[in-house]
Length: 178
Length: 305
Image (tube, rainbow over all chains, first blue to last red):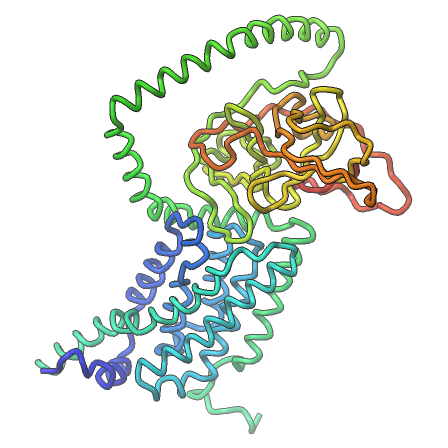
């Protein structure tokens, strides 16, 4: 029986089993719902972009099924959701997905703590890009809380990884039991 | 052909090639959306796709709101009722006067072809949420294309202009607030008929009135109403009250700040004025400016004072 403390080494084994499309689509939908909650004020500024984190998880753990194409369309959906100029989230997500594809093997060789740092780098890059684009288009700096958003998003990497590992973990237990 | 990988290693274009492709498409979409406003159809179809999701996400908060409405104390309702009655009486005299004026105006309008210049038709819309764009504050309203709402229509509340519809979905629309940066409204001073352009400042909910000469007759407390010369806002809607006039002889223009009359930040119900505006004659073509006027949101193209 494994304790939750050694989740990480298990997790690396778990993800050798491919996750079903149901889990991938379901998790992305759930993340989108989270992003579509009626945020406002500084909470909106600090809102962690869960869609990006979940997308990153699948790009890293299942590069065969989730790639830049899906990232692009998720980005368009986020632009519509946030009623922003079409294409800016798409560009940011595609860049992040590419970054994740490049450092994927490296990320997977680390435990969750170090993974968080890598993800933080990607998330900060995406936020900065969207911020700069909007400043270029003539918007005012919306407030310092916007700098919190990628940091919170990165901190959610470990819990979200844990949750998304669970179905595979259960399946592996079932298979080893039979 | 010899250098091609065997089929079981074949993984399509390289990540870098994909990145280049998708980035270019994203940038093209941004340019098309920003410069030409050409992607309304794409946005609309995407918004139809994600509408059920947004609805689902908004449901818990809406339910909470309804619940708190239900448990509103008797006391508050009574007080609110009393206030509304007082307001009704205050407006009664104005309303009767307006009726007389409307009759007069109808007589005049009957003599000349064309539609009424004044705001008549409208739909009541409930505010669903603030838009989730952190860079511009918008209101999401529960009326859309299917209720006849179109981009560019003015949005008002009981006290004055709130803003303008800037994006429409099938069942929802988004209104940009009057106080947002670069949101311009042509206005007129009620005291002396002086015409100006009120432009949202984008910060602390105030409105600037730029390009007024230092000698302009504007005082603290003056009331701005829409002048109606843009063909977007009907004339006579209350816009803002002047809160500060700073005249410095060193500058060509006075610095005038106004506060919107409408409760720009605190309302749940607003009215979208859906009346079709009369066709305007085409603007005179000047030599240097041959670009067609953007149809998307007429008030946003900053007119020249």
